[in-house]
Image 1 (tube, rainbow, N blue to C red):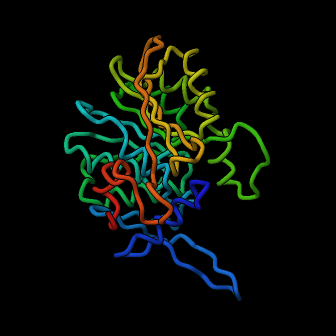
Image 2 (image 1 turned 30 degrees about the horizontal axis):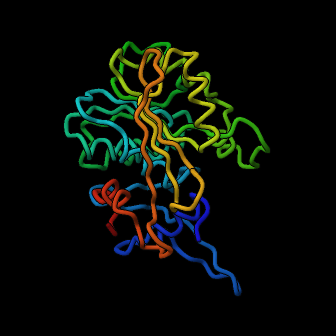
Length: 273
């Protein structure tokens, strides 16, 4: 049974039949999964050898779930490899997407991935801290999307880059919300994914920045498991009413027993769907 999103992504890797995005390394009697340097989707590929944070379930779910209808200008905050920006560009032929990334290696990799995709004319990479970008740009976005840092405390990683991504060091949730409030157009949406507890805290914090919840999708690996992630959509203004639904990734105990909802959400991207 899979009880965490890292485990879910490991199983998805194993099921990615045409081109393996993961490899299993044997050391004695033990096996270790290593993420490959390239992850291929149906219409694009992601090179990730220069990025600390690899392609993962959170990013794929968010890129597939985000609302793109009538959206013209999108901002991907903390674009990493560029996967979410490229998923959005595949879904909407009219959407212009800017990916902002503070880490230089990740920025260079995202820019390269974007430039080598068939969506390159609508993809732009920016190397900057969000706070700096928000202070100088005049552009307002009708879609802002982010797979943000999700620990507000705890032990720091010995890998500085991963620590900067996984903890709210260079971009606190308060700074994120302040920048989103400025950059989001009056009718725009702000979509993100967070672990359950962090997501509940974020919803409460967002109200202080005049951002209200429009939709929440609770994500479970299986029906009998706890909620592991929240997919959240915010908009300007105050309000207590919001849409709520649920996404369960697996129907049964088998590792290929994907739910109809998960398949419908991701089938345009994963090779094995």
